[in-house]
Length: 276
Length: 268
Ligand SMILES: Nc1ncnc2c1ncn2[C@@H]1O[C@H](COP(=O)(O)OP(=O)(O)OP(=O)(O)O)[C@@H](O)[C@H]1O
Ligand SMILES: [Mg+2]
Image (tube, rainbow over all chains, first blue to last red; front, top):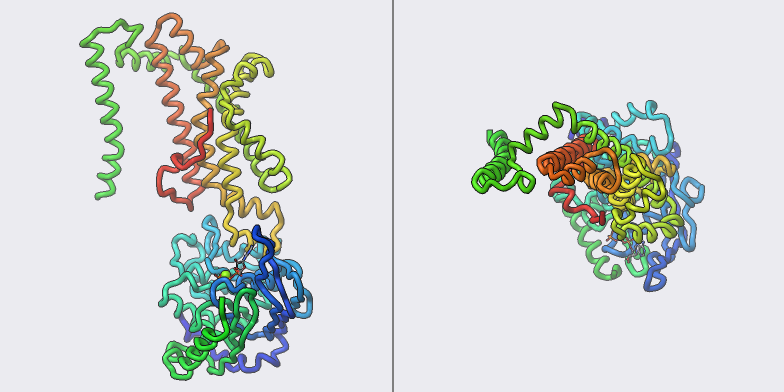
């Protein structure tokens, strides 16, 4: 897409900690969650703590089944924690909140609505006035490079395009925090790389805090300011890596030695600490 | 180009079989000359149908069948939809009523026909009642299944947006269930005529079913078969209408195979 059309937004990013205009910190303290199953209680998360600073991009990396989606459901308010506390912008998260946006692994678009109306789904559901958001929706579609497809139906779009619509939908109500649950896992490698670059650009121009869940080491290192490594059964954070790579990161970044050293380091950590 | 020939073939093939069938029938009748009260000649049947419609003597009967079936269909559909929505929306109701509905479903609905006369009396209301009852079950079961099988990610999406129950029902659950709903609507439409004709057989002074019984009693087999043809055509038209409406409304759904074959079976 037209990456070049975006002016130089990058300096903003290195001042995230002081960017008080976008205060949207997430704090998770000693959270545990136990599912009641037919085989008895299953402890999916155990004493998990993490923080996402305002404007920060945090990736949670973990093997399948270690409780990543569970964590995301807690933060989005779809589940409530058995123990521990979750605060967003200083207020406890007890039920779904309008300052959180979410992007799932599948695009989950409504096939009977046009792309534009799909982006407006959260607006209608929240009972907000649609006419105030129509222009915003079109702007977001432009941001994800789909302004020409506003009146198309999801079935007329490729998987990557659908996922970009889902990203636009997650941002429509201007949430402080964007939650993403393996949003690119269903895409092929080429589209995925493209989407990673796109997402970095969108994040840079919207200044959201992002909690990005993935099981791809490459995705985590490329996108995040900080990578949290989860271990499973029960799920907890076992290690943390601050990614020192400067932004914007590009396809060339992926070929660089320091990038690949970070991947290697994470693979090593995975082998040692993260068992699932 | 290929598309057009394909379409032509798929249109001409059934016409061809029908013509062959009629010609065989015609040849057999001219060859063996059976008495017309046993097997009438096909041209007589078609002429009788034509005169019955153009001359108008069959029209009141066909009209009565259409009216009763349509009213009964609408009532059955309305009840089935409302009940399916209520049961899927309130788990308490589902737990208390769903098993009951399943029990009733296994009873052949036509077996209740004599009692319908006892309960609602003779006349068109009896046909309407049985049609409504017969139409209820196929639609209820598919609507129930459809409303229950909403993509959990989509419902999560609506939940994170704090969508109200009514909003979720109107904008997520009903549209999600729409393909299934139309399967039910189509089966119900084909059942409606059966229910109506059964009631007209038993006790009626009008209707296509009455016409069939009456002309059979006077050994007017030609009229009986002509009336059967009329019913067949009605059945074809009604399911074609429902299917066309379904394809128009549920434009996003492309069934991979003939969707009716995948439908839940329901005893008449
Ligand atoms: N609704 C539920 N009821 C009972 N157990 C559940 C439920 N959802 C998840 N679990 C269990 O909790 C654990 C963590 O599941 P979760 O879906 O959070 O994993 P995940 O890290 O997202 O995996 P994946 O990468 O495959 O999506 C698993 O062992 C799973 O079996
Ligand atoms: Mg998951």
